[in-house]
Length: 113
Length: 115
Image 1 (cartoon, each protein chain N blue to C red):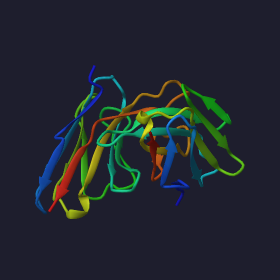
Image 2: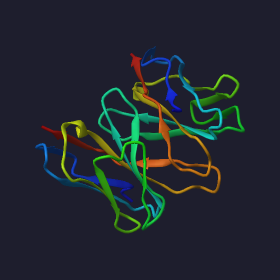
Image 3: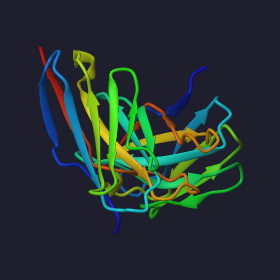
């Protein structure tokens, strides 16, 4: 079946550096992608989303890049802070008329002081 | 404005017992969801409700039932709990913002252990 996967399960970054979290997806027809952040003991929180007709979207300190040619998604976090330590999930909606999200397994980001 | 609330926060059941997990949202969203999250894994959709009175199976519906009681509340029932249902359960809600966003808002989760 179709799946959303992540290249690395863990990532450690020095405080103040930029971090990049990657995600590969297998459904070339996927329409919409979301990045979520999950802190320990809490539910996921929306970070940023991107539609398949875009290749880049920026938010506050975060940028999502979408490469449809190689079916790859990345989340860039600028000037990381201790509060950025969390598990990050990418999720996709296979088609835009359907609101069901398919989640990847997650990457744990640890910020080193 | 509490967002999405879930009760209970923690629960321990014996195999074969039943229980209902409660979820409520105060954002007037049409869509609500139940997910489970197992260690080292992402969230998997159990059931989904696009509107009051409708429900749809997700990826892992076996062993669960749901009720969309009204627009605010969406409950998940385990009729006969099994150890394989030990997990953290998340409820979420969403309202499609035109064609621009499918952001889902999540509750804090219920940690369920079945012994």
